[in-house]
Image (cartoon, rainbow, N blue to C red; front, side, top):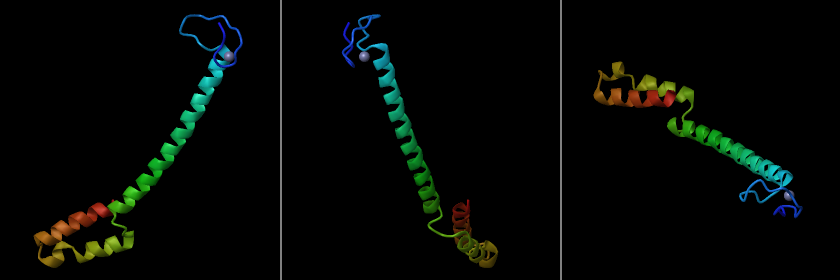
Length: 96
Ligand SMILES: [Zn+2]
């Protein structure tokens, strides 16, 4: 059988085999390299999206400002109003 990759003759193990052993190994190494590059790109994108998600969840607010909001919206300062409880609960989710 003539290898589709390099054109050399090789002993075919079955009709499914179209390339010689060295060409098969080279193809698999290229595929593995491509998968590793894609994996690296996906991890980088995942890290970027995780950071972006954390920023969005906090509404772009820094930790000190969130603490100030919690002090201002504390239910004790608003006679336990439902509004102050709702605002406090939402601001608490920004702190996590
Ligand atoms: Zn070959």
